[in-house]
Image (tube, rainbow, N blue to C red):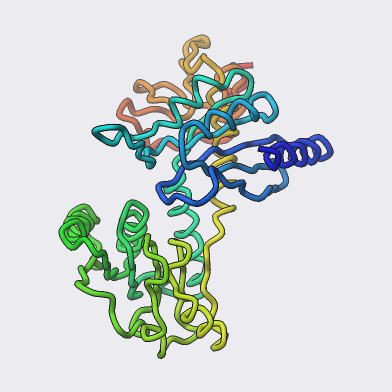
Length: 345
């Protein structure tokens, strides 16, 4: 907790000096560690600065929430239920969202899904890695070792992008359900598919992308990597899935294993929060002005209503509602738009 105090002090100093909004994420994980929680580094961009804590039980989440409340602009708590609390006769899920919400009184409280940000960050990184390839991810062969919550979501996104994904998981019954589910819900026009593996392949070189998202430490050995070259993309989401010998071997060969930095996903989420706060803070979404009825974009309008940027002070017209959730296929001239806006003023 002393480290948390100094961490917050640094965050507040930076934010005051640079006049940036502050955000503190409280996340939870099912993968326990020795300490009760760990702090994430302070990160900043042009508009925002954030840090956070990953906790392993509800009591720690409450204590951190008490310390942080009022010291940052936004506290963002993980709403995914990942931690089991052992009771006398059964296990129950810890709900840190519920516990933190009861404590926060001063800072703005919002929620997020940590696993989804990880998946989003991973997808962005993979797409960037293959950005110079005319097909992008399409046609790539992917090996995914570990297919829990994150593994399933990653596999689905990659299949939807046109990659064939081979999945391994020790629990073959659950893995069979995961593979069937992906192939069932992927778009009909997507030829790529998910495939079940009964064991980890001995040779990884036939795959373009190797992703590990398993709970097992050191599950990837030297024997899997002998024919790996720099053209292969290796990503360890599970943290420590590559054995020390395998890691040393790849470093010696000057191969890079990416641990995945999801800072970009956090900043994108922060920007969406700030945008939503500004965009939807008005309680007026529809207004009648003379013969016209205007609605704010993002609101389902009735046929003939005019969609504008701001109901209170309209400066832009986006179109005319067709009453079915879309805009009528009518092109308004600039002179016509300016004439209507003039009437609004």
